[in-house]
Image 1 (cartoon, rainbow, N blue to C red):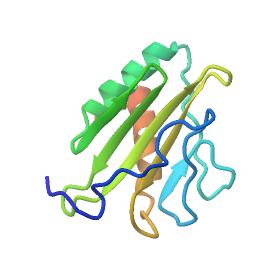
Image 2: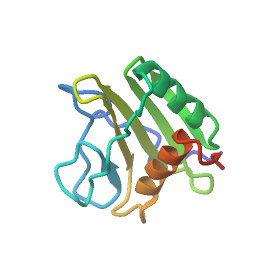
Image 3: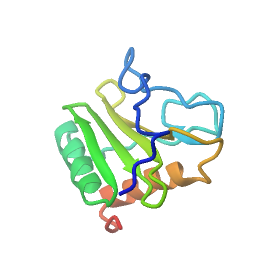
Image 4: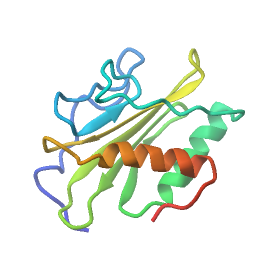
Length: 139
């Protein structure tokens, strides 16, 4: 996998801050279930009848099955993975945060560079949602 020097450094705003994931930039290169605007909003992941532990474990397994994705941080209620584009080595950050209060798993997927991601981050979240529901495998 080729590494792009422009996207190697992790953004300092990743992680959980006051119970929230980082917001999306003003550009169209990411989505987040905690976004306040429709352009960046994506629905959180509904665990169905799964416990927090079951959902987070299933997310980890689904992500580990995807090519060019590396888990960076895995905690009981938070997961951060880096998704690398195979050709140019661009990096997208994929984050999940379990909310006990809302009983959902919030998600954020955002490109580190660029004005648009051509819908890639939204598609990634929806693909993972289908994987969690047992609809297929990551390619």
